[in-house]
Structure formats: structure tokens, C-alpha cells
Amino acid sequence: MDRRDFLKISAAGLAGLSLPAVHGGAEPRKAAGPDGKYSVVILGDTHYDSPNPELYHAGYTDPNPVREAAHRQEFARNGIMWSGRCHDLVKRAACLVGEDTRFIYQVGDLIQGDTADAATHKRFLDDAMNLFKTDLAPDLPFVTVAGNHDLRGNDDAVCTQAYTEYMSERMSRELGQEITGTNFLFRSGPDAYVVVNFTKPKVDEITALLEQARGARHVFVLIHAPVFPFDDEDYFFWYFLGGRKDSKAEKRREMRALLASLNAIVLCGHTHATEFLDWYGDGGRITQMTMSSVWSYASRGTYKVLASGAKGYGTLLFKRKPEILTDANKALFDEYRPGIRDYSISDSAGSYKMTVDGSRVFIDFYAGDSTRLSRRFTLR
Image 1 (cartoon, rainbow, N blue to C red):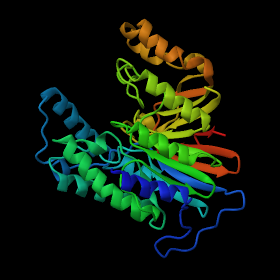
Image 2 (cartoon, one colour):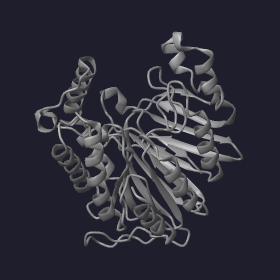
Image 3 (cartoon, rainbow, N blue to C red):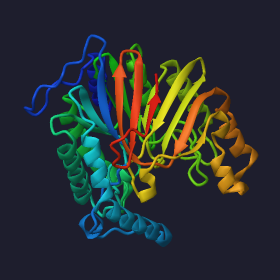
Image 4 (cartoon, rainbow, N blue to C red):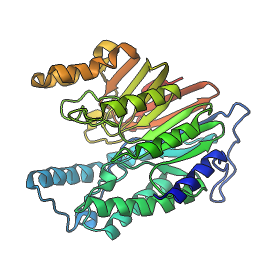
């Protein structure tokens, strides 16, 4: 994105553009009250795919045969999910849409990716967007953020460019404002939503957007990866500005301080878990809700807490793989643990409804296709 494009987005953010109340000629929805009460229906990672791998993955190859075999196992997993369970999950999510719902949010990894060319990649994205839009709420904006799978294929650079071109145009239409990249800001009433591409992050651009959001009633950060290290033995390092060697630790802490100064609410995915983390530090607060709609096993349609509380944070990975209990890895979790006021993690998948009611924000989680509330998470 060049400077002129960035300024266009900045101007839109400063103008406080809000989501229109009515879309697509549908029945008018209930206007937000003076306190700005509204809801957002949320899907976690979806990895949309076809039971027929040739539909989107024809010609896909990877120079690493082990990695390609792992990806093809994911195609098979997705085919099973999208032959039944995930369609049931989406139908359940559609029932969460109400008169006060302002938009739908999907946390990234919209598609499986792994395509051979740009044209197939755009078709894959378009099929997924149209399916979710049709099945959930044709009259509402459908907002998504770049996930690592959304940018993956024979040539990641080609797929990234295809995603950026397609989503810039699509998000412009969905939100009714000009969007020219994968980092942008939009508003819903008094609240600001900052959409962040965590892959190869443009820190200066992201910082500028977050500063534009300052002063909003609530600042929501829509990002695919979590901003806190994740309790998993294989992927604990894969978080925003993280890494195996934590080489961006200074930038990570600077971003953490900025998010804390905004009392940010982070809505993310990536980990295929339902995780809640409320952290106080750096003079402020960051509340993170991680969500998943990857219903890969039937058992994930039931809510079960695997660990909870500050003492439970960062304990699962060391139990599962004791050999990674190094001083450096332990210190990474110990850095955050003193600030944790509330924490829980589950491997459950499902659908979510966030309600913003004045100073209150909470998310209701429905595991699998359950019609009964599995858990309410109080974010504010």
C-alpha cells in the first residue's frame, strides 16, 4: 500500500464512518440505542473447502513432500467437516442473527488455501464469502481478516496478492468505505474496529490505525493470530510479533503497551481453540477472545475446559511435551502470568455472539450446533 492509499484509509477512519443500518434492500434492522447497544455474530476459523479436493487444489504441490502430505490430510479433514458438521454449525450461527446484529465477523483462515494459481484462489475466496453471506445474513456486512491459510498456495506471494486484490474490493463493498489493503479501520457507532494482518506485519501502519481508534468507547482488534503466547506444544510461538526465538520481543512489548493503553479487546482465532484471557499490565488492560469453528472431531462439539486460572496458563504444552520446558519457554509464559485476572481454554468449536451494551461486552458461545448456551464470557 502506498502513502496515498494509506491516507485514504486514515481519512475514512478519522471521519468516523459507521456501518449502514440497512443492506441489500432487506427489512430495516433495529437502530442502535443512545448507548450504542448492538450484537455481532462471529465464526472462528472455518477452513472452508470442498469434499472434492480437485475443485480448489488441482495442481497444488509443495517442495517439501512431508508438508504436502500434511496439507492433503487437512483437505480430507475439511472434506469430512464440510460434508456435514460445519454446515450444521453455520445454520446454528444463522439463528444468532437478530434485529440488533450490525455485522458478521470471521476470524481468518476463511478458506483452506493451497491453490495452484491466482484465479483459483480468488474463486475459492468468492465461493466461501458467498456461501457464508447467503447462509448467515445476506443483508449484513460480512467482515473477515487475513489468516495464514488465506494466503497459502504453490506461490504464497501470488496467493497473497490475489487475496489482497479480492478482499480490498469485497470489504469495500461490505463496509461501504474504500479499503485498499489488509490493515484497515471501520466503526460501529462509538466503537472502533481495527483489522490487522498478522503475517509479515506492517507495524507502523498498524500503529497508526490503532492511534486513530484512540478515544473510541471500545477498541476491538480483529486479527487472526492471538497476541498472547498460546498453550500448545507445537505452536506456542505462533502469535502476533512472536516467533521461536522471540527475536521481536522489543516490538512485541511495544505493541502490547499500545494495546493496553487502549484497553483493547482482541477477537482472534488461529489456534482452533476457544480461549479467554483477561490481562492487566503496562498501565492498562487487554482482553482476548480466541474462537474456532473448525469442528474437526465430533467431540469438539461439546464444551470442556482443559485449563483455567492464571496458574493454568501455559501448563498444557509442558505436560504434553516435557522436553520443551526450557528456561526461555517457561519465561515466555511467566512474563504474562502475573497480569492474568481470568483465563480458560477449551478445544471446543462452535459459533459466537458478541453483545456490546454501553460499557458491557460479553460473548455467548454455542459449542457445535448446540441450541443451548455453552458459556458466557464477560469481556467488559
